[in-house]
Image (cartoon, rainbow, N blue to C red; front, side, top):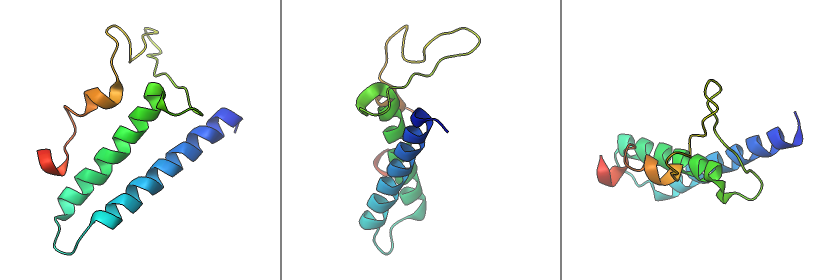
Length: 94
C-alpha cells in the first residue's frame, strides 16, 4: 500500500475505535440495542463523511463518479456530513 492508502485505513481504524468506545461508554444496562446500533453506525458514518469533507488534515479526499467525472460534493456544493443527517437514523430521531 502507498502512504495515502495507509493513512486512509488508519483514519478509518481510528474512527471505528472512537465510535465503538463512545458507544460502550454511553451504553447502560437496559438501553435499547437497536438505539445503540443506530447511534454507533450514525457516528461512524458521520465521522467518515466529515473526513471526506476535508476536516481531517491527513486525508483530503473526493468522491468522483467514474462515468461522469462529477464530484459528489459539487453542483451544488454540499457538506456530506451535514446532508447525511437528514437521511440517517439516530436514537433521538428514530
